[in-house]
Image 1 (spheres, each protein chain N blue to C red):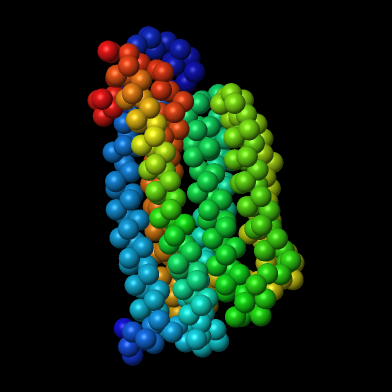
Image 2 (image 1 turned 90 degrees about the horizontal axis):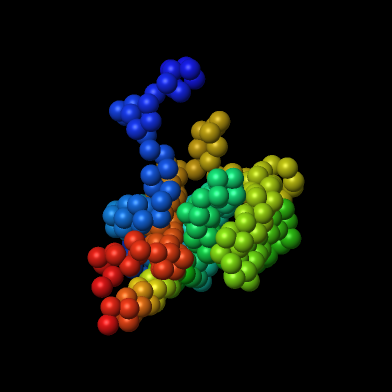
Length: 57
Length: 261
């Protein structure tokens, strides 16, 4: 551990805005992308399942 | 085995350990395989990210010149590497799709583009947040930054063009042309710091010389790069499976999938 305490860690030697501004946006985009693909997957799956039921009934 | 021998092999009697290169070019085989692979890459991505962030933010020392602002490197460099690598892989699949007319290759190219565009944007974003404290500017029109911005436009152009064409096979071919023409830009980005005088610092690592940074810094960066690799593979395979289902939904094998009832 290179930090004396957590507030040192969050302060990032005065560069908090830049370091956390980078980290936050990277995290949001990567998680957001996964959620978007999951939504796309659910949509097409529901569509296929519905079409199947309609055909069999 | 000479050509003469080869032609004498009877049809159906193939040499025992022949590799079936095209087995997974069939969408339903590929769909099965990727379904099993995704969880492994997702777990690898999560573990590597945790390890890489720990190394970068808790083990690596503060830089004597840039202070803690340099820690952006653990996100910026892997994102920038991925932005270039994904473009090359995308162009490769697009070319295969064009040459062999294999639908799945083109679907791979289509699936890679949004992730590539995302990493390009993130490289620019983190670069701006790094440039401000170190150079005093969010943005400068120098060779490295400008060519990376062009890369973003290439990705967006590829996606917009494909979205504007209704027939998927025509969209594949049109997209492949952009992908292949634009691949010229990747070496320009990579070598821009050497070819032109730029504000951007030179390569962080080089195969020819000893690393110019502390070992733990280098390690954190490389682990994060591996994490982004695993993430990219997982999310791209996830997306390509959606594309397979969207395009093949009227085929029998999709209707017979057990997971869709």
